[in-house]
Image 1: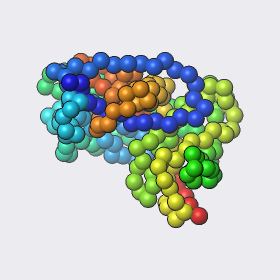
Image 2: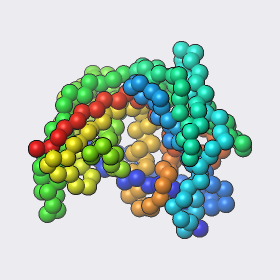
Image 3: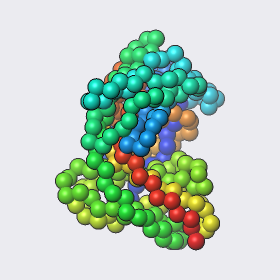
Image 4: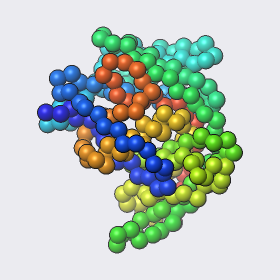
Length: 261
């Protein structure tokens, strides 16, 4: 048996080449899976802790509910998160600010997990365009976010799509290789159907390179394994600890909402 992890298919257009990274999962010793996010928008922020399961087990993923989770920043602020339920932990005090470093510490009964992430400067999200195209005999929307990449190289972006208030599983990441300092003209295909009258929200995140690498490598694994389950594998990680997968994402966030006509 193999451990089962969530593999989210990530669609890319105009992405640069990256190395495909493989992982070896041991069925007898599950991984701790961390999903931790902090943005420049008002909190609270959430951390989700689960365990991987064997490939042929049901999609019931054990949660870790007896951990101590702490987020701190370079300004000396420290926030011990409140445990809510089902492996969910929530901040009480800390506020994300662009151009700042954040630190995550998780104390579990068997290990300590640490991670850090730099929240980059926000790049203004100007507008978004929806274009109808024919995609293998079906009508689909091509989505083009409008923003201008800063002149300094090394910027990375993540886009999330919401339909009628519900987050779509597909996600999209760009880097600025070959287009540094230019207005964006790259597009992505909306995963699944969206129709006139739907309320579509596009979220733009400015992310650190390690978070870009996480999602890019996750896409590579999804394309080669095509597994279905409920927690993300993470061969490229900004977390340190014994048998830990996942990410700690500190990012800026902007959203544009459109009702399709």
